Image (cartoon, rainbow, N blue to C red):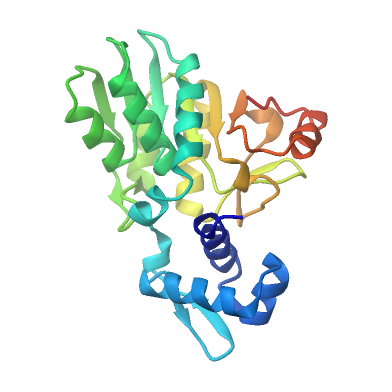
Length: 253
């Protein structure tokens, strides 16, 4: 495993557990103590965690997120996923894009494409600004609400109330976990609430998730596998993992 991918997985693990020991991380990731200490030093330098005598704790709210830190993780996989997702977008569609870096890569593909007529609803300030600043003349609808520091996603009742006004063709949503039990999940309740509302108002929902999210379960359930149209992932997903999800009825793209 590359160091960048391992550090991302270590950070995700700490974010779920809130507090960990170095020994626990050694066992979980099957690497040496010196490697774990280097990884923790790196995450601490980014102010995502706080090192303790025996391990580390989550640095809240800095860890809450990490758009610009996450942006540089698994970029090839995110680009691949974004290109796959483009196969499902047509001129004239009314689509919705969630926050998160994978959706940001999808937004970059959209503005670089030959598409000429789209309506795009998003609760992500980053996604909205990328599209508005492009040479495209898409109609962009920003949901409004309370923007979260770090993730630049709008959340809260204002956001939910705005979403209820729309009938959306296709929703592309980045998530934090896709468990083998069938739950698609988020780390934070406020982000999950937005995703649940958009899913209810969309004809089709596509989860966009790199292979590292499979087998993971986070605190807040967003949907079951059979409640979304498909899961768009990268080619690095192991065949045995893919087969398990297909047997559960998931549409893995």
